[in-house]
Image (tube, rainbow, N blue to C red):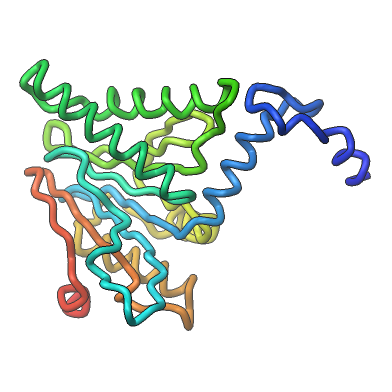
Length: 236
């Protein structure tokens, strides 16, 4: 039966705009699988702001750890991280930074988070349907502060965007999102959210768990962005 289905779908993945007999855009399906293979990133909204924890999968002692980042600043009030093909992610993140800067120059005010997310999602959707292009194999988490309140969105390879209170994307996402459903509360502050995130990652990674592999960035409701080093994490 699977062989018949495979035979029916042969050729339908040669164009990003062609539906398979099952009503799927196979190039988009492949892009979403690439996200599942990427290293995980976790974001949690708190009473203080937002916590991002990115898994860098650092294994080499020769790697300069501070040079390898999973979480980036888009504007003074927005940070972003992604999972999947991060060369694709870098392109979208740089586009987001450019859009935020243009908005500041034109309107002399910070960009609205939802407006930025829509712009990036529109780019992702365009690449999922245009000839000669392929979908971006990355999913992004945008976290920001508006009116001293934390806001978190996920954009997907298909161009869909969804708002969350807490979300994990990447290869560990299914297990961690299940645990988040059980353990997340809206009363967490940033330090408690870091502890919760690291606890969930430790339970999931088990013997591979190592604090040095994580890139952790927080943004508080006053728009202060902080990147934690290993010493600070050990204190927590």
